[in-house]
Length: 284
Length: 165
Image 1 (cartoon, one colour):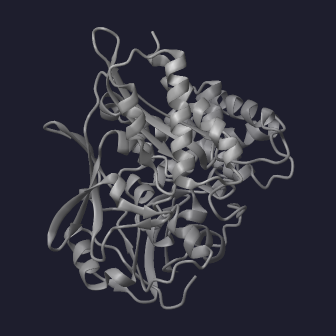
Image 2 (tube, each protein chain N blue to C red; image 1 turned 180 degrees about the vertical axis):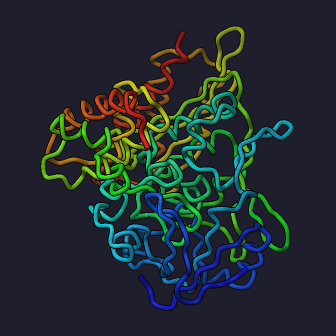
């Protein structure tokens, strides 16, 4: 615990943004606390202020707005777990909640915090990427939105500017398409992902892939979309050998980005295997 | 909006009693409960949300007290292991843990019982998978979990006979 640390608890989003306008550089924003409190404990945070946004109703809510799906930054992983809207329009995001932390963590941890913390292993990020999500950043000057992949510039580095707050995520809904998230971790519960994948895919009447989005997590400095492999799949009929070959491409891409590391011996095969597992349902 | 420079007055209900304490910013709910309120039943295991020994029930939901900023307790209804008993009589959950030998060293037990409490509030008749999922955030290094799962199953039966608090 740091001496002289100040605490502010806004009741309205406007109050929070005004506070960040004045003190953004010296402030740590806290919602669920599941990352921030650990950082405090280890002495890694040196802020003057804590801004507690956990009760801002403006940051809650999962809803369809026209042809967009809005997920508030203050939505907890438990909210995501039980959301019928997400079960219908973004099952990949919901599946990320199924294996996220533990019940206790999910009850308080928020999607905004998971994204803002910018861990390469953040489980909600690959699903947001395949939904081509944009993060909406609020400030006293108004709103701007950035593609989710641009919100992280490296491990634990976000591009949120001083005075800004992530307020919501805007996703492209994927009703009626195959949408999934899977991860490999050391245990089933309470484990950081070593490799994670999110996909949305659909076939046309002739059984050829007509739509596909693939995102890889925990394997590169920031989770990322693998466009090359999406292009490779388009217009092809998915077979076991095709998926195996594409999985090989994903692994190669990972090594190209992250370099060969001690973990590569394992991850190279794990990525390919997980890719096969997640896309296998696309084979008739 | 008030900016608190030092201690933050925090009012909440714990085990049915209303309390008002001053907490520091950056303090955990676990510290408040153990040190300021001297309720030592809630344990600190890892301190980083991985073991579940500090599990408490806040507004009906299981949370890790070690990760909860203390000022967030304000206005909440909190239940700790001390609040399970009813007028000196142990609760069905406690009876089930005793009866099924789900306790060895006992350090994880309060947290496990609070996860059980939250589960049974939500789902009075959980199946095996639902039980395993509900307690997967609570580590036990003694029992091997078999007895714990049996205890939770048994607790559900006992609770349906005797209304849980």
